[in-house]
Length: 164
Image 1: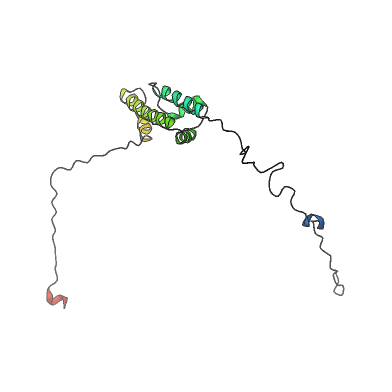
Image 2: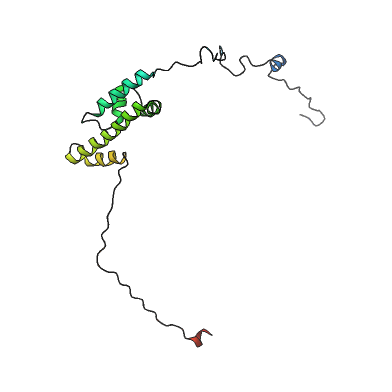
């Protein structure tokens, strides 16, 4: 560019067309096909798979499973039932019968873990860490015997005249 020429201003082009600026979003932030639930007929959502009868059946199978000697971890039961441990807690909140079955199963797992560790059927480290999951704690005892004497010797105390 030479010194004498001025640069021409280029108009800026907007990428949004004016018609789309004024139009509301197609679904107002909701998925296509969304309709408000009719609370009188259908509350909406997926129907529950856990009916009262199914929860009671699960409680019975949990109690039966807990009576086995090899029941050490609730995760094993969850694997057999194709569910997850948090679901057991959710079901316990819904049903007193299932809550009781879950308490029995936890106590059974704890007892089985302690017995298997004491009998040497499982490695001691596995037993220790497994029992810690049931709130068992290590206990350390320190036996103090004898007497403790301390001797204090003060050397070079300043006299009153030296302090003043």
